[in-house]
Each structure stands twice: as structure tokens, then as C-alpha cells.
Amino acid sequence: MPHSIFFTDSEHAIHGSQAIRRLGTPASYGCVRLAPANAKALFNLAMAEGLSNTRIEGTGVDLVGIRSGGATAT
Image (cartoon, rainbow, N blue to C red; front, side, top):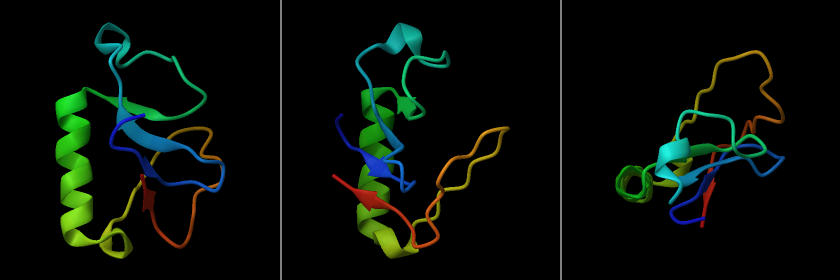
């Protein structure tokens, strides 16, 4: 998963995906998939600002294991 930013204790992440046609549809176990160029831009911003300064906010019915300590990246 290129340019991954993990934001839950259950290892959910925002990351790039080559399956561009499937973006916006359920296709993973809970990750947020982005076009590769968008994932790279977000990853670079998060790295430039620092993960401790990066806040991931999600809304929806089933937010599982959100971290209180911030994001991690790979």
C-alpha cells in the first residue's frame, strides 16, 4: 500500500490504490483509498507537518478503533 497513513489501532489507513475504477466503492476492510498521486500528496504533507501534527477525522456509522495519539505512516 503506497503512501500509507495509519489512523486506527486496527491498522486502518489512508493509502494509494492502483484500482482507480473502484475508488469510492467498498473494496477493503476499512481503509480509505486514494488515487496514487493524491495519496502521495497527502503523505508528503503529513510528513512535512509531522505525524504528531496530523489529525485524521472520520465520520460515519462504524468508526472502529480510532487512535487518540495521532497517525503513523509507512
